[in-house]
Image 1 (spheres, rainbow, N blue to C red):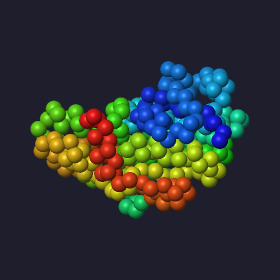
Image 2 (image 1 turned 90 degrees about the horizontal axis):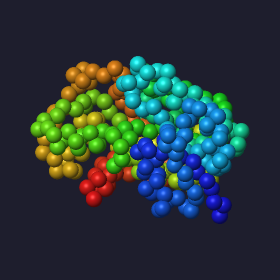
Image 3 (image 1 turned 30 degrees about the horizontal axis):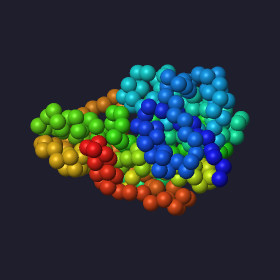
Length: 288
């Protein structure tokens, strides 16, 4: 077996941390290197090439992103620099060096008004700067290279870093009551499950390049997600469902962003856990 070298950007993020934690079990003896933003500024093209020439990877897993959705509205220059232009530079460099790119994208490329599971061919109509920047990054990857996997995911959480799960656990310890929106529907995705899928793609050595959707199975509102977090954590709180009108944000969230996973399941033969199963698994890890 040929030992592959895999470079993971965004090395301090929750997905990278999950890849790192599972590497010993799923890594297949390949060499993984994790680079944080201090190790590698992906917006610096010369730095990017220098680092890549040093490590000479067979794969780059690009987990680096500007993910502050609301802040992006007033910081569009930095958002597009990280989520679009830097991604284009990574893609061009991968193409020159015959490196396979696994790039993480988002359900925010969709407007979220069609109440059916979204396929990879569905029209993309992002409504905010964050979604527009991520879609532009996707387009640049497609323009500049052929051997890529773009993985769109949604509602990502884990035992690492800040996310909805961690926020709910903190608020559940601080408050007696909480209101959460129930009219935004999608699927929570455990970053550990997405990490396992990335290992599967690398292990397969597949050339079935393109865009794939990955989230856990099932459908949930944010209220449902919060309810299950508190139930599994034995936290007693008065949880109240509200509409998005009561909780205005600078960016309108997709009302429906449930994605079809048929393509990735059929291509790689993977089984995807239900979101409640994975949530329970993650909470148990947090409580260890």
